[in-house]
Amino acid sequence: MKDFSSVDEFIASFPDATQKLLSQMRGIIKDAAPDAEESISYMMPAYKLHGALVYFSGYKNHIGFYPGASGVANFSEDIASYKTAKGSIQFPLNKPLPDALISKIVRFRVAENIGKVAARKKKKH
Image (cartoon, rainbow, N blue to C red):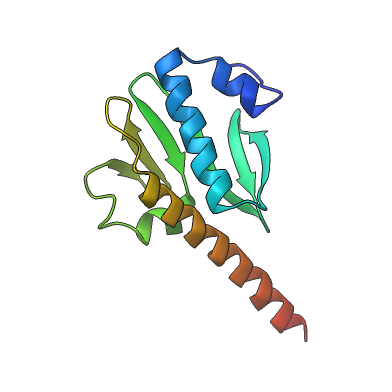
C-alpha cells in the first residue's frame, strides 16, 4: 500500500480499465455532492461534508464503495445484487457502475450529515 497525495495520483496507480471506473465513480460523487471536500484518507479517496460522507477504492475484481452503515442499510433492496458488508458495497469491474444508484446513495449521505448538523444546532439552543 502506498500513501497517495491526491486522488489523481491514486487513480493513476491502477490499470487503464480500472482507472476509467474510478474516474467515473469520482465524477458521480462530485456531481451528487459538489460541496464535499475531496481528500485521501485511509489510503483511498474520501469525501467529507459535515463529517465523513463516502470513500471508494479499486481492487483486483471490484470497485469498493464505502457509504457507511446507513448508506448500505437504507438501500438494501437496491444493492441486493451486489456483494456488501456493514458499510461497503462491491461493484464488479466487469459490469457498468450503477451511476444513478451511487448518486442516490451519496445524496442520501449528504442529507443525513446535514440533518445531523441541524440536530446538533437545535440541541445547543
